[in-house]
Image (tube, rainbow, N blue to C red; front, side):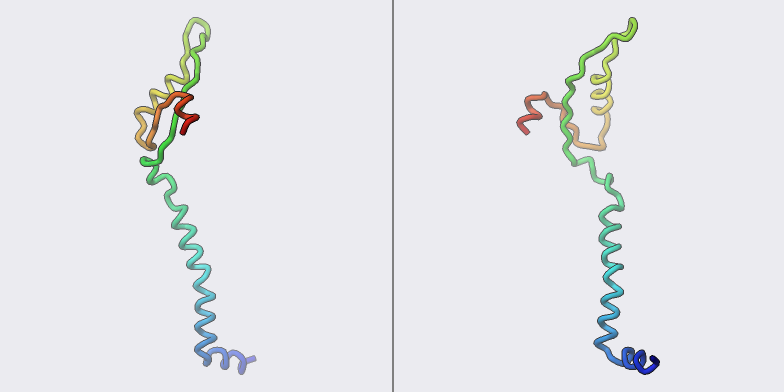
Length: 93
């Protein structure tokens, strides 16, 4: 057993192959973690179309406009490139 290990250690080709095999998981992990590190870091340029077909509803004596309120909130949000379009414009895109 000692002879086999000493023969492997003395052979530079085998050492190179072992080194490359050890580097494969390191390279894979680096690429994978690098791609998933901050997925929401650059979303301000990501275009998102918003179509609001919501109709106001009456709840008790109060009129509720959830769709309009949501659109108003999104207009103040700079995390995405929001595009507020009609249903027809969205279907054409």
